[in-house]
Amino acid sequence: MSRIIVILTTLFFSVCARALPAVEEGDFTIRQFSFETGGTLDLRQHYRTLGKIRRDENGQVTNAVLIMHGTTGSGAGFLRDRYAGVLFEKGGLLDAEKYFIILPDAIGHGQSSKPSDGLAGAFPTYTYDDMVRAQYRLLTEHLGVNHLRLVTGTSMGGMFSWVWGYTYPDFMDALMPLASLPVEIAGRNRMLRKMIIDAVKQDPQWNNGHYTSQPPGLREAMYPLIMMVSSPLYYQQVAPTREQAETMLDNMVDRYAAAMDANDLVWAFDASRFYNPQPHLEKITAPLLAINSADDQVNPPELGILKEQIRNVPDGEAVTLAITELTRGHGTHSLPGIWGPYLARLLEKTATSDKPDNALLLTPTAPAWSGDIPDVFTARFDTTEGAFEITVHKAWAPLGAARFYHLVKHGFYDGVTINRVVDGFIAQFGLSPSPAVTAAWEDQAFGDDPVIETNTRGRVAFAMTGPDTRNTQVYINLVDNTRLDNDGFSPFGEVTAGMDVVGRLYSLYGESAGGGMRGGKQGPIKSEGSAYLEANYPLLDVIVEAYIASE
Image 1 (cartoon, rainbow, N blue to C red):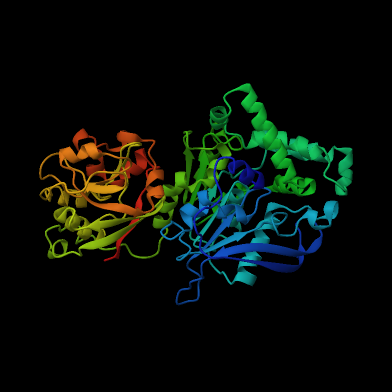
Image 2 (cartoon, rainbow, N blue to C red):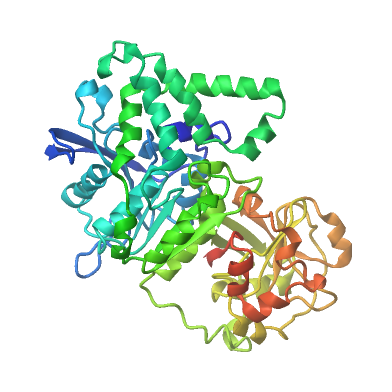
């Protein structure tokens, strides 16, 4: 929702420890920008970008993605490991080598023009419409972007996504608002915002915005703000005693207040006062997927608003994520490791390129599926959680290495769901999203290899139900499983990059989402394919693309 959300989630997640693609920063000044409520200003729009623009033969940009932050935040918040490390790195869903990522600082936020720059209480009282209009001008007049592949944002940025959708309906291929509702800010939401605003403005030291030091009311405003962004389950887990809860609260208030300016806070929260997409939802023509979390205290699901209003969006879909040990209330919006599979499906749905021909996949006896393979090769798997690489050694298990090489090379694993992830055991995949393809491979088992290497953490082997039953399903050992050696499971390779990604694969469904081959729970996947998993286990991670990276 905000910079305060960014600060909040740093209690739970570290800053980015992995290398990101190059980030470029800049400013665009809009001369005499006219505000909706009156007044003009030479408005500075700060922004960050990753990647390079690509255009089609008609000059239309094909790969631009606009990502908008929450109240009192900035685009810098999306460069943290929990977000950029999942989406922007090579192999991520929004790989910056493929996409042009735009992270603007909204009016009143980050390094864009804001009250604390000097105008203080005289700064124009901007609105969400102003903020979106300024972003549009940044894109079209300065960055040269005439079309967006995706518009998305968190909290306030999610609300901006709705506004973008009906204000510029032909400008994007897809919309994905996170942690937002497409109606007027009212009820408890507005009450909490007014508490924040009043805590500052009713402090005599605020002095109509012309204070010389931060008024004490700023600290008082932190209390309703903390309630807005709180996660009851998580807070109970991390602060299970009275002493821990009070210490956590005091630390939050101190940290938040120290990071804030009173005017910036008031202006930012009051900017939503005229927000109301509800009368305009039918104007949104691009496919839209709205994602909220059931433990979001700002947009609680019991209101029923999202479910009701999404019916008015011509190509709209709404999802409310169930509360789990991984969700973080309102802050779930910044965890693509949870909702990434939904983004992957939205991107696939709105892709303009033709899907590959499945004819080869339906003919497992074709010559392409046999032949010599390299002695050593590396297969790369780009997933909804990030990328990992498996280096295969033919000498470890020649038959297994050969089957795996051809499956990867000819696209068998593209779109495959990693359906069995059991903490402390294995991550398994290999059932095609297409029931027809699964049926074609049903009787294509191959012989066993002797067990030469052992099933230690990171090693990869084919799953089986008994002698000579290996087919297309493989597993990655999440721990030391040397006991599997005695059962004939023969490793043919090991994860040599991205084992941290493998460790983050969605595991809360456990064995229920298709279990082991011997468990007899894979029938629905075989008969219904990805449709069954998407309907019943939608958060499972998916292999977007697998390919031979080196040989």
